[in-house]
Image (cartoon, rainbow, N blue to C red):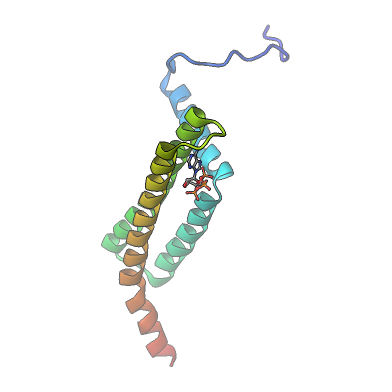
Length: 137
Ligand SMILES: Nc1ncnc2c1ncn2[C@@H]1O[C@H](COP(=O)(O)OP(=O)(O)OP(=O)(O)O)[C@@H](O)[C@H]1O
């Protein structure tokens, strides 16, 4: 019988099943949410956008654009976190111009995706809010 106190051997070989791969991927996603404040902000803003989409009754096409915008921002934030961690792994607490370059570019990708999301949000929701304003006026 396995002892509860037996130390778990850290895994460095390949995953042995689809379930194990999925579990590690899920752990990775939870790590990004736990450690990155910006990711939590994206989740809150994404949820607000989804609620607005539900309120205004978006069409299927509009839902696809909104989902694409939200997922792109989150994907870039995940990549940004990967870049930060790899840089930190290599440089430790030391300054390196290449680490700065990599981190700044990865952060730039997030800003780029966020600008796309704002554009999509404006195109989708500005006319809806305008319509709402006209009916309530
Ligand atoms: N080792 C390093 N060498 C050079 N510059 C660095 C280094 N570490 C961080 N920087 C600079 O500091 C900034 C912040 O780095 P940090 O790793 O703390 O990212 P962060 O605050 O989590 O960023 P973000 O807001 O994009 O998630 C980087 O964009 C980079 O300009």
